[in-house]
Image 1 (cartoon, rainbow, N blue to C red):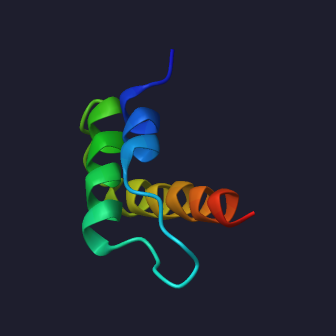
Image 2 (image 1 turned 180 degrees about the horizontal axis):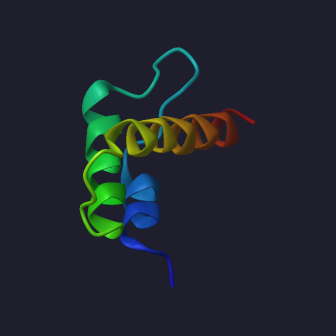
Length: 64
């Protein structure tokens, strides 16, 4: 069963190469990742970068 952040990444609108993930998309996913980890302090950059990567991977898969 997919975790909440993975499910959220799948539900965010698909985007083409011309339109990259928005700041809001990344923030929403990063927040979900942070919550899944128990809301730890000091790891916001790690969650943000992971969210960016997951959405980028998804964009590449959609375009392929």
